[in-house]
Length: 140
Image (cartoon, rainbow, N blue to C red):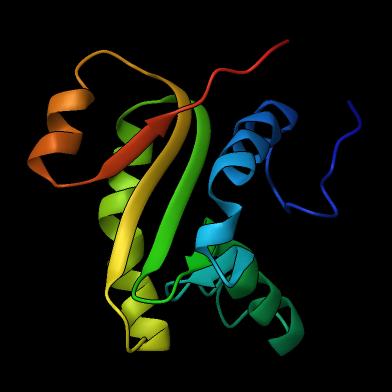
């Protein structure tokens, strides 16, 4: 498989397999997807750098949502990974807040986990925080 980084920025090859399985099943539910969506303020490296370098530092340190799916009645904030752990849960708790702060959408936001497996202890956290997820089997 060739790395489709031009289609899905910053997704790893194994994550692309998971994402394409999701798209095969759900693509018709969405009008469009945005990828690598920057949210949050980022971090300014400081006044010792030129304005251009400072802006680059801010841009590169912003949080990035893997995919945002725009449906008719809600916007999905999607984290894509092969093995979902606490990092993915933390991102899905944080990204909707940061997305709302930046874009002020008129539709409800839905965090969604797209993965091929859940690490131990993750399922009860997803349930407690009302984060939907789906497992997709991927072939090597």
